[in-house]
Structure formats: structure tokens, C-alpha cells
Length: 66
Image 1 (cartoon, one colour):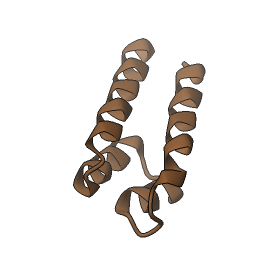
Image 2 (image 1 turned 45 degrees about the vertical axis):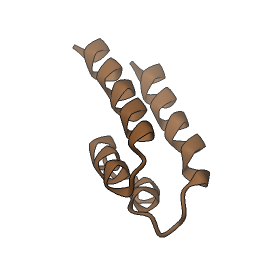
Image 3 (image 1 turned 90 degrees about the vertical axis):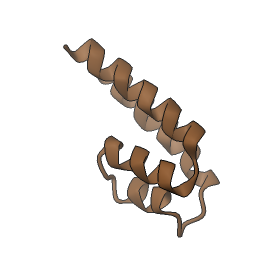
Image 4 (image 1 turned 135 degrees about the vertical axis):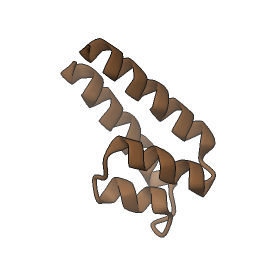
């Protein structure tokens, strides 16, 4: 399960440099907000594809944890 967590964090870290610093998504990532909040802010900022992929990562992570 830790490997999925690391993969999720790596995915976010790779996406972060593409974001303007003033975006809510970038701020959420920088503040290390919970993944769910990052997804919601990404949707609000218009990064729907990123939010969708992040949501899939989270779903896999949660399913393997149960």
C-alpha cells in the first residue's frame, strides 16, 4: 500500500511544476492538503484531466487498503 501512496505523491509532484503558483491547486499541493481537497481544487481550477487521474489513483489506493 505504501507503494501506491508513493506513486500518488510522485504523480502530484510531477504535475506541480506545470501549475501557476497562484492557482488553488498549486497552493493545496504546497500546503500538503489531503488528496481529496487537491482533487476538488483541481476541478475548480479547470484541471479536470489531472483531477480524474488523481481520483483513479486514490480509488486504487483505497481499494487495495481494504
